[in-house]
Image (cartoon, rainbow over all chains, first blue to last red; front, side, top):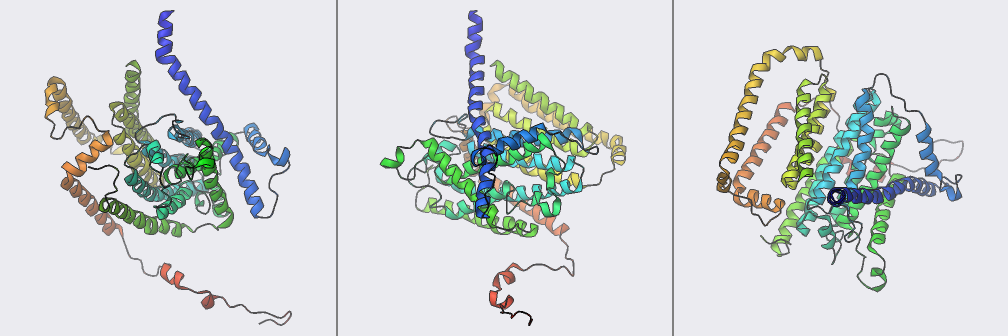
Amino acid sequence: MAEFWEFWDAYLWPTLWIIIKIVVIVMPVLLGVAYLTYAERKVIGAMHLRKGPNVVGPFGLLQPIADGLKLFLKETVIPTGANRGVFIIAPCLTFILALIGWAVIPFSEGYVLADINVGVLYLFAVSSLGVYGILMAGWASNSKYAFLGGLRSAAQMVSYEVSMGFVIITVLLCVGSLNLTDIVMAQKTVWFVIPLLPMAVIFFVSTVAETNRHPFDLPEAEAELVSGFNVEYSAMTFALFFLGEYANMILMASMTTILFLGGWLPPFDIAPFNWIPGGIWFALKVAFVLFLFLWIRATFPRYRYDQLMRLGWKVFLPISLAAVAVVAGVLVAFDLAPVQG
Amino acid sequence: MIVQALAFYMFAFITVASGVLVISARNPVHSVLFLILAFFNSAGLFILLGAEFLAFILVVVYVGAVAVLFLFVVMMLDINFVELRQGFLQYLPIGALVGLILLVELLVVLGGWHLTPEITAQASAPAPADLTNTQALGELIYTHYLYLFQGAGVVLLVAMIGAIVLTHRKRPGVRKQRIADQLARRVEDTIEVKSVETGKGI
């Protein structure tokens, strides 16, 4: 019996504890995804002077649950010409990648599943892997619309990742660490959105492109590609893509919050503001960034593909590359560099 | 300890298995997907070694960018699978030779470490123990080997320019959008607002 307790203490309990923590993080994320779709329809409805969903439950609040149930009960159709294995793996991959990014997000001081040294790189790596789900879906569907959507998405995500990388480097130069908690703590005096405003704008636009959202949603441009990479998907396989896309949006909004909007820190460290717990500030900031996503969707027309590529390679890349040199130069010239070497 | 060993064997087994599948898969797209799996699991091995920076750079650069472009190209190629198989035996000897040389070199390095452990202390720039490996790597690249690093960058730049020069062609008669002209347009140049009386026309 003593051996069992030793085993329990050494292996079983830590594993179980991690699983409990994962559930505590994933459940709110999925709930957030469900209500982000509701918020999107309500916000866009208000901007179009319509009501949005208002039938299922009070104020239509049960609409996302009804949608989920509907998708769950439908039949998953796999096209005969499809490459079965890859076709099934693609949505699972998208969904899993959208969730594993949350492992390193600090919700408040100390409230983080894995406080790793290279947190930013981890997030960057996870977001750069997101393209595989779409590319695999596009190829495995064996349909020209899906394939075109997949190819567009691959080119788009690779292009915008480059400038995102450079923007992250400018933030890292000001922090001197790749740890997400350190990055937030470095913003105690001033949020990075103020000294690095152009970089924050470039980062935000790049995250919109990275998540394939309006006005950069060319991979699923419904007018030309029917619905793009997910045209052959139905029921749960489609739901996984959908959940993955929205979970990715929330993840990217959290990343913007942590890098530029001071994470869980209150705007001013004075009485009424620092009474509110950090988690609430974090949620409010994420909600604000997500509102920007929805606002953009309701406001702008879709980009043309060559303009999209031009913006990524000829505008964002040179500007962010120059910004790396400028920020590094300023930090060295005024002796502000956080790590003296 | 046992968890580490289990993790190592899992990553190592998947890496080797997917490496074999890269060359034996019939479908080239499946080959590339297995290659990506191999990259990913090697990143896992790097993490077990405590080199987390290298691990994530491997994922970001190889899996996130290089393999995407690779997959991109392979998906668009119209490959005849039967033709692809035919050259297999012809190229087998030279491929086996390259593989053998790599294996021998690896064995020499690892065997050296194993047989004489003191040789690791003679590394030209040993990693300082008190730094995180991101800092250690930065010091190595940007302090000790700055010129070699810059040289490698220049070689890559030249290769890139070479590829662009070789593939770039000017086609006559292509209408391109000049962004500067677009931005220079004013509302007065393009739109004229006229109040039209009903039934008159312009």
